[in-house]
Length: 178
View 1 (cartoon, rainbow, N blue to C red):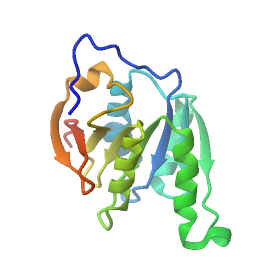
View 2 (cartoon, helix red, strand yellow; view 1 turned 180 degrees about the horizontal axis):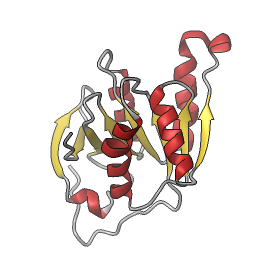
View 3 (cartoon, rainbow, N blue to C red; view 1 turned 60 degrees about the vertical axis):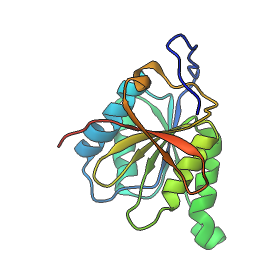
View 4 (tube, one colour; view 1 turned 120 degrees about the vertical axis):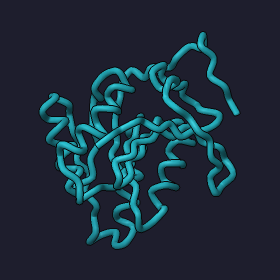
């Protein structure tokens, strides 16, 4: 497993393009801001340059309103259900992931598809935050990251786990209280 040394140079992307994947419908705008977006901003150290949003879900509306209030550009991606059928959402997500440098993935209680998707984004060198329905925010990174972890994230509590594919990822838990 790669280690992070204090004197290691940090890679700071020139642009932060935050892609939003998945959605939560049973959450309020203030909860998303307080327990998800504010901690992400604190870790990034600045606002994203662009936020990429799916067209579905209440959380997309709330994130879009939040971005607008901070004068952050947004781009909404539609799923073409008529043309692509069942795979429309996955096609839309693939377009978004090609453009984003960072990702926020809202996990689902019904399926582990988004968990696996978050892991694949981390393996591609993206900085990935996951949010579960209980407002737990975590950061995934590969054991051999292509992007160095920002300084504030080194101070977060860490634990390692092995994914179903056998790769180790670091989960950084951010303390949130309701």
